[in-house]
Image (cartoon, rainbow, N blue to C red; front, side):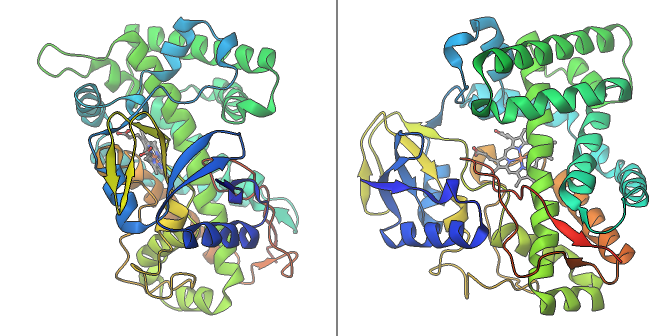
Length: 394
Ligand code: HEM
């Protein structure tokens, strides 16, 4: 069994070279992850689509770091959400959540996202500056906090806690359990407050949402807010920062975009395909033997659909390793595929459009502080993001 190491690489060049080498072993293969867990890695575009639409490949309670130290009620409050649910539970949850997470609510956010973006750019310190910590990180977390209805005074606490929660294995069990406990308590308090005093926010809508006699339970509400806080910012940070980085690394593409801003939507799709924020989907397992491509995967195996290779599959994309912001035939799966397709995709696209437009307009001579180097990446199983992005803005 080969070892799947691209996840722990800390440069984009090494990471994508590692993924390309794995893809050469075939579209469906058994590998050992850096965590020591054996999984079936699905690397081909067609095969990933098959895996993400096969009803015998199901999600389970998502992997929780330090699980043995967490009481069951805390696990339920973190994990009763869309990404750990299967039909019919998933169908029911998704219907309830979609009724609150509407297109109208997202579109209405545009002026406020512009304001947050402008004020972050106004307060950038002298050049060179790390765009990840000064801009790409605070923008989506402020947006998601306001969307959910987290009062501004408590946003910093949530920010600190969700950063510990998303990097769970890097912390001691005590620290992790304390952060999860505090976060769940804060969310439960917030739900109680919104119950007695609803506002014009997503949390109040999620509390109020009804489908016939059905509504979200307390654990479902807590867990949904938990996952939105985490999914809603860790990924979008990466799209904004790697997006800017890849444009700076490809000056010809950057010039085209600067010259013709109508290319922004296709540029964002291409940035999602070329270097997307999620390397893989959340792991799933086979509940019966399944045939993917030419391979039969036995029952009770862990399956890992790999978006990083599917979106660069040469049998689906022409010149897959080239960044081409005018690409039109681009069925990438950066937001997943099938029933778990990202609920936040319209919000992520809106934030990326505003962020890229603002940053390019504000800094006509934006450039990398160390153009000869690969910007450092965070090692992770799921998320593909830059640890920092140092640029000159003047
Ligand atoms: C699901 C990627 C932003 C909320 C997913 C999935 C992917 C993904 C790949 C599917 C995972 C799977 O099948 O295991 C991304 C990317 C984003 C982004 C690349 C930014 C560029 C957001 C935002 C939100 C969000 C902003 C919320 C505000 C969700 C939720 C699901 C999900 C709730 C679960 C949907 C379900 O299971 O039915 N996302 N996401 N995401 N995402 Fe996103």
